[in-house]
Image (cartoon, rainbow, N blue to C red; front, side, top):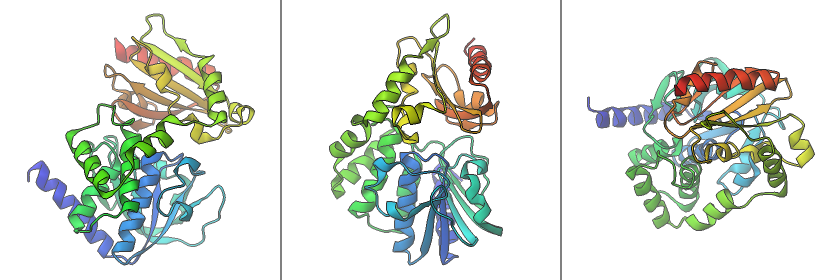
Length: 329
């Protein structure tokens, strides 16, 4: 089969999976971003249109800036709510590997059927049915095609969620993953009535005082390698509290390291309460940060990935920066 035929076949397989069950648990990755929550909302919308029911969940606290999304209030956080029972049918969206589902996997019934919809090239195909399209800019792009395959017309709620996922995962349509297909989809969503300017202002421009203080703290620690090809920042486990910030305020801070002229890889190190160090890596194109992250048990995209290292933060920083340096040689 051609790539196009394979794509259609996988979408049909996903729809058959959905038709084969009545109720679902819908999950996305820990520390969810715009694409993860938007994808959860879109799947919930699609399941409702197909006469199905769903429990929506995430291990982490939800980004409050996404509270305008369809059915956002129905997404349960394990940090706030105890979810009872187990589920025989699960849909995972935007999860690069099974571990990214986190503690929610305890809710899966033995031998649960799992539909894995994702766009990360490092996805290991952990589902019973896998719809993995690395060429897609965001998981919502795959879901747009899935809805189109199902022959269901979009409404403003669904269109807004899809646009949100595209907007955030392409950096406001600025990243290299902004393909002609992305722009075609965005245009169709604007035609439905999505307010692109309002979403861009809310999601990309505005920031809380807490985030501003967090950014000030991070920038005061910005460090570069001798040749200026690597830039990194770090946040301690106490910084969020001291700045009056929340985890979602960390999003995008890594780009301040990458955006310095001459930097090829930017890294943000985040100390966790458990003493580990989470690293977010961004590449200007010279280095495959997905491969670097995979060598430390993580994954992601060629230009955007993440991994977790053992602390303290000083040794984790030295280890990862050295790995990046070797990759840039």
